[in-house]
Image (tube, rainbow, N blue to C red; front, side):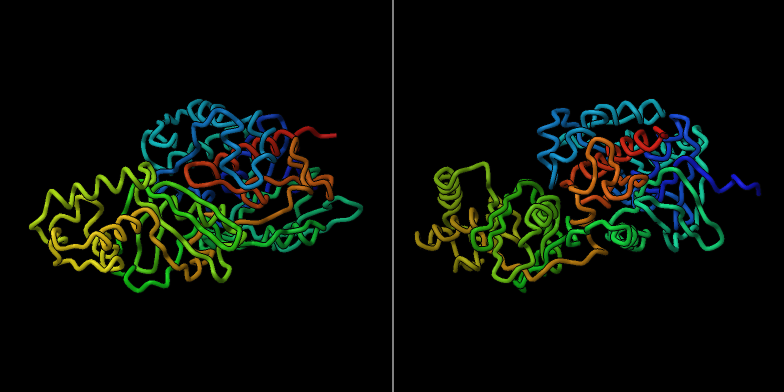
Length: 416
């Protein structure tokens, strides 16, 4: 080993999506780059995204519309203008990864294999001669006079002109996202906003929810209310043995994370958000009139899935064996009202291990949005989930990783 073997232009910490992009881009621009990862392999969390299919971006090419899907989305305007969804798709296709656009503008690899996305990124860093240090835990960081001097590993010290922290959040801890990056950022003088699990299933107090496990709906509006606070999301939901999950439920835990765990919060489901109450009432009454001699349980599936219909009916004082003609106008109106405004009582959230992302992170006021460089440590950059900017389900979080990683890689490679 020579004296310069552990001296680099850029040191990237974390081999997730942001780190792989940052390391590859910095090296592509001529920097000598080392990529440090505590796991034995890169991209463990990336392989889990999109249920193993990897929803790698969202094809919203209007930057304003794209940013509306994030908390603190305005922070991302510049990096999206430099490297947005269009550039992301082109980037992967140049690496021979063909993509396809599905419902709600979600972009996937044509192969439906997250492993192919990871392989494309590995090809990218290898082509640009990024040095890889896997199975390498950062033990400490030395800094002085507003700069990082070195990173201390178990059997090695790393010196670099610039450092990029792409250490992820605190969700899916089994993949290595244990929040260590937040600890280092805090030690270096950064403020870390409160960390909460986000895009995480909701637990419900109602015991009947166990009977609905596996029942899914494609278009439901979910609204969270606490005092004057109100947030709504529309999309797919899925009932579980403990509560409710699915994209709309996961997104409500992101957009309403500031009050979702408070006492007194209520949830309301609108099973027919595209129909106003009057139109829905007319349609439901016609279904009842069409089946006068049938028991409710024998035609309820014409309205919503049977298991769910029976729960809503029970709460509306309708028995499953009641014949349509014998159900009072009052009970029918209550049933219809509940279809548009079905009340649920949250009982908390599942923890970080079940969360897609971590809400919170390094304060965006302490990061230059045009370069991703720290305003406190002049040779430190941030990219990915460690920053307090998070998106909804649908490819938005990975796009933030690609965009911030790309910008951090470019900025750090401009050596002065």
